Amino acid sequence: MFLPRRRPTTRSPAGWWILPSLPLALFILLPLAALVWRASPRMVLQHLQDPAVTQAIFLSLRTSVAATVLAALLGTPLAYLLARRHLPGWRLLETLLDLPLVLPPAVAGVALLMAFGRRGIAGIYLANAGLELTFTAVAVVLAQLFVASPFFLRAAMLGFSAVDEELAQAAALDGAGEWALFRHVILPLSRPALLGGAVLSWARALGEFGATIIFAGNLPGRTQTMPLAIYLGFELDLDVALTLSVILLGISFLVLVSVRSLPFEER
Image (cartoon, rainbow, N blue to C red; front, side, top):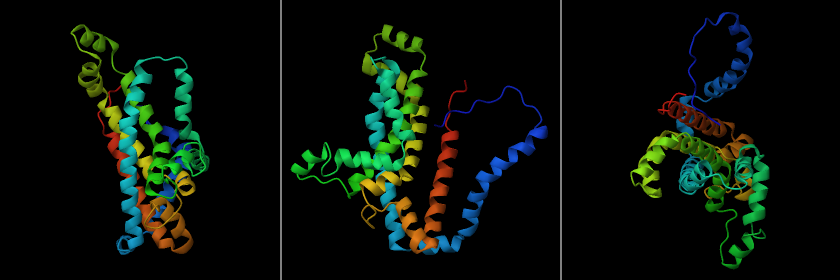
């Protein structure tokens, strides 16, 4: 989980700490550099003209944006409730809502299938109503929402809980109701955290693989997102996999840069 970086109060020379710091830094940076080095700009531009590649890109963008919007709309009231109102068993509920962060993606896909598949707990009733979710774009959105929403929830809860209680009490004394207090006081002060959570949630949704392939399948032009196209391209055409990998790498880099540039309050 990304948190605002605390600036050190004092700076000291790096000294001999540089040498033991190099192995892990090189281990992380070397594969990234190798990926960029192998994917030439000419190759990337060439494969961007491939209909299968463009379909995977646009499908990923549409579904990840939809999942992020749903995470924000549905997650904001839940995060506010957990951050500002201590309910019975709220710590257990927080733990359960955080589970998708550490749950293996394949397990998430099986869980979604057992819940919303044709023979799932809720899927039976959906099937009787003529609604099929599996192997559709809706299933892609649900898979992305399941694994990405905890990022927004966690960031929103941190933002809401960081609002000074005295400000809320002062607004309440001035006659502000619950909705006015949330809209005019808490929401503006929590906006950087909400934006950061939404960006991280979108990035996680964009890179979702395991739950999607189990719950939605890997159907080109229908449910094949960029990570799934990379998986298929690695078996059929490595250049396609490299092209999509570089695109996702660039998006991930821009996401982290944008989150770090948000005006988080230093604590």
